[in-house]
Length: 333
Image 1 (cartoon, rainbow, N blue to C red):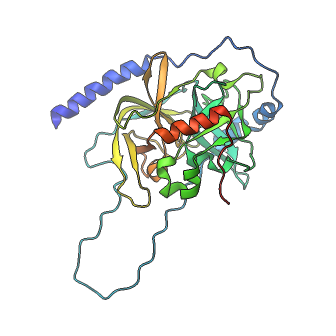
Image 2: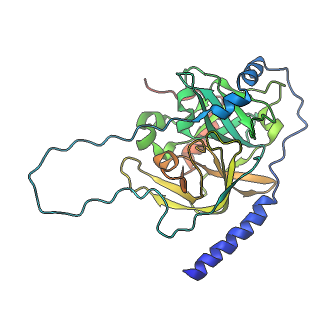
Image 3: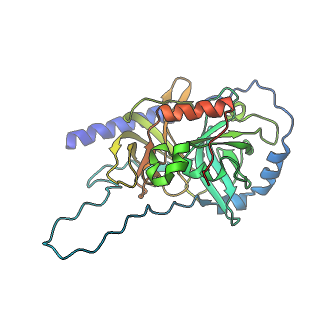
């Protein structure tokens, strides 16, 4: 076990050298901006540094209900079923995280909820034909799909220290894509479908998102085991994002309320607000995303262990719908 721990530590150190010296995905650069976007101008004025700093993480969904059981006569003592093991294992090495200024293709959504409270969730720009697509968690985006009204919803790439280095990109009307299965089953029973895409409009200067900041590649069907993995997320209320270097493994849910098989990753400090943050692997020219914080227990109940829905055919089908302008799914009620 000692030798294995040393090997893991050495591999992590080597990964740190590789990942921290790899530059972000280059932006397209040569594209000519379009006309100024008045919606983006309005959002840019609304989301002041104070409002962005005060934004809270997306509210956690209610705990899945359990069916009541009828009282029974006393019986001999028996061993109770073990509680779901969401969290670090005894003695497990938890790679540390660090705050930094971020990278251009990763940022955060800001919006106001029905009560007027500012909310936030992490997200990343994925390559698309129209250079306008953002990937995040389904539990972050589901309230804005279909015909749901937008409430100051915009994406700020590389947000840090109250700054919007590339401005703000409004989400297009009727441009949020979340799997129908996630609506139908809910956050818990539908945990395996906890991902979504948002189609954006240009920023206040008329720039398309990917032209301004570049993008990561979406990978599907690659399984659960990946190393090295660079995970990035925005803790609610923090001035800067976090990054951590680790690896993903396969996690078969032990909680009947959240069924499925998920990617599991150990990284310290990933609290509320980091939902939707990407799990990145090195890719020629930059990065590729193989998961996002979400899925099992909407990403995990502890700051040390995070999860992701597995990216497979359902993720690719949703990407195809978002990039071809197909009508998005909507809640049934």
